Image 1: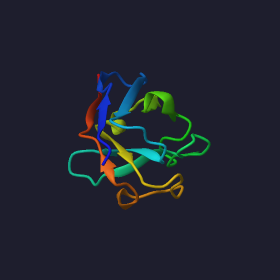
Image 2: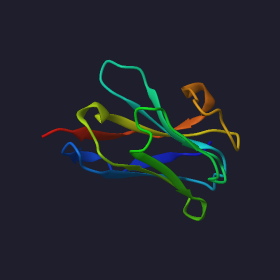
Image 3: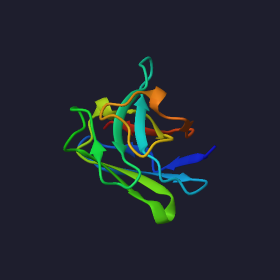
Image 4: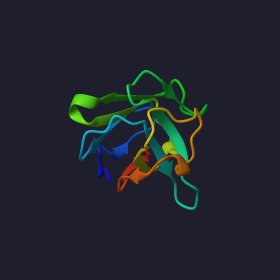
Length: 124
């Protein structure tokens, strides 16, 4: 089972930007995703990218602000986040599936491996 390690979280002011990284322990050409979980809320889908990087999908509340990308040569997936708001505050998790593609609005059940999470805090 692939191990995933996220990094890049931290504190940022509203309107700011942050880029998260997720490194896989082994070569992983399957679909990947980012989810987030705020205190007292369920884990929610943020972005997903196909195994070859040719398809990306986002929910409406981050579309146009977040960009997911991957570098398979480095076993790394990225999440660029722009125009951050306090509502983006959460623990962000990287996830790996066992398929090249997942549905456009995946759930946690679509992914077999998870990272430990990285905290993102947006506030003044």
